[in-house]
Length: 434
Image (cartoon, rainbow, N blue to C red; front, side, top):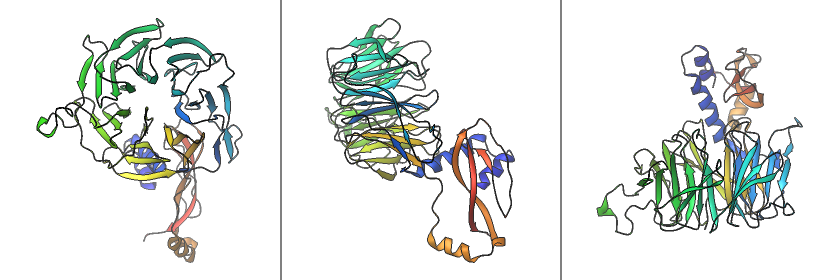
């Protein structure tokens, strides 16, 4: 880490390199934090989570009980141990509450004054955050599995909706009506996601084993249907031709640069696609257990090198490297099936929701553990033969690139920005190399 800092100070390294290195270290050290709790409100499973992208402070949750809860993730008490409190909720007694399970919640991408929710009660609702009243309601003929608003759109306000119908519905926030539909799937649409790179490009996943990419400006709509065999028909039967998986496709997620798309199917496979060419990159993730009968909410890190995918895997969360397929670790803490997870890119934190009604916070450890034999050897050395290395502790937001740089064999205190926040560096004794 000191090498990164000195190279950054000398102008040798790109400013982003240090931030990515520290973000990666923090993701690799994620652990269940015993000092951070999320207030338990839901009386049944937590199906969906979303953190607003403006401040990264407020989180929505939707449950099988139809309840929606808004949490404040900020530590207002400034104490080491604290509970993320629920600010408000749309409970069972609320006049606009969903009658059945809430499957997706999403913040309006550009401010926190509005959010959306969709449910098995065949509705998509637009909520005013201040009044907690439904400002608009869209009704559908079938169960709603998923919806999504584009994070980058500036020229349209379309919400893509996947329902029990094979048709993809596009709802316009401006007009308050369904503007048009996209036809091409043969069975129910389980997951939808707008590209974070092109505002008119939409990806949809269906129970017909297919994933389609659409340009919603085109009359025909469909750009391509992803083929797991990359067009090699000799290796595919007629039934498997132009299919992304050999089972229902119930999860998809773009990388944050929009260049690649990850999909998950009930064939227990996860596949990475080039979103520009539609090519299967053939990355092997091994068996990815997926028994969900509805949409699976997984997420991808942002700002790391390499990037990581966090995938619900039974009662655990599997962490994979996106571009190599390596299984890094399994995060264990829930007592029952994990339904969803969401990544907080500013602090490299992960939140997960489960059938056990709990929301867990996975936080980077403050410092890497030192093996016992190294510690004993270090203690036997004199203080003059020790050099101080840093361990990072998150303190408070600060918009600086480099605060200070001091080096002493007695004590090091360095303040710098690794991920857009101030870190205080504390003393760790490590053998000095001569």
